[in-house]
Amino acid sequence: MKRKIGLVIAVEQEPFERVYGKPKTKTTLRGFEVSCYERPTYDLYAVSSGVGEVMGAASTQFLIDHYGVDLILNYGVVGALEPNAASSSLCLISSVVDYAFDVSEIDGVEVGRHSEEAGIAIPTDPHLRSLAKEAYPDLPELVLASGDRFVGKAKDKAYLHEHFGASLCDMESAGILRTAKRNDVPSLFVKSVADTLFGGAGEYTEKRDAAAAECAGILDHLMEVLGQK
Image (tube, rainbow, N blue to C red; front, side, top):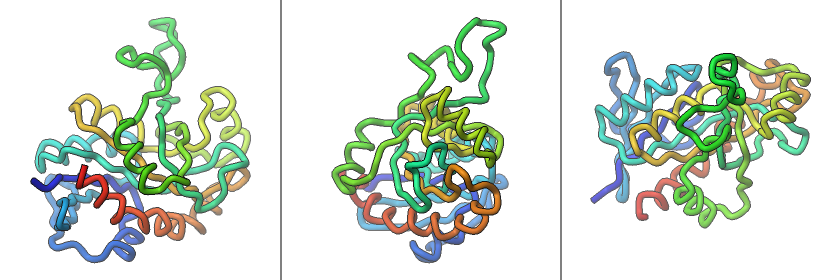
């Protein structure tokens, strides 16, 4: 039986289609634009979520409820929080820190800590990461800080790196990961750096599409691997 893969895309739909090809069907349902692809080992349902944690979570739940996907994949561009992450560098996300989540005044726990998690960093699915590493051994596994704010200033990036141990940041991954985990659906995150430590909105805008295309270039083979295991 073919695997059903749900792909959540924030703003990188056009670079994805340039690399991956036009979908078999494209429809708008419940406010979500869905592109459907059929491959020998898997069916793919790609949703344009839009920006932010809430829409990332809503898109993930929609894919699970409506299409019955058994795997969530998120691809896209991120910002670097430390100097070793170069533009267009591809990576896997080992864990996500929801750095904007803060109930410390009520519960006395660390900023970013969700009560159902063992620690601040929420791990992604280790089995899916191992399959991805078999296919692409050189991909580093990095921690990502996620929150509903574009982080462009170097001092803000350095703060996230120093306080949360994260190397990258985005605005959707925490919502996607927590929703997938709540539904017992494994998830994998493949990212490419757009803006580096000392870059900001200008660098992000300039390099976003190229970084997204670099990331999309490995997805077909990666999903073939995931579809067979």
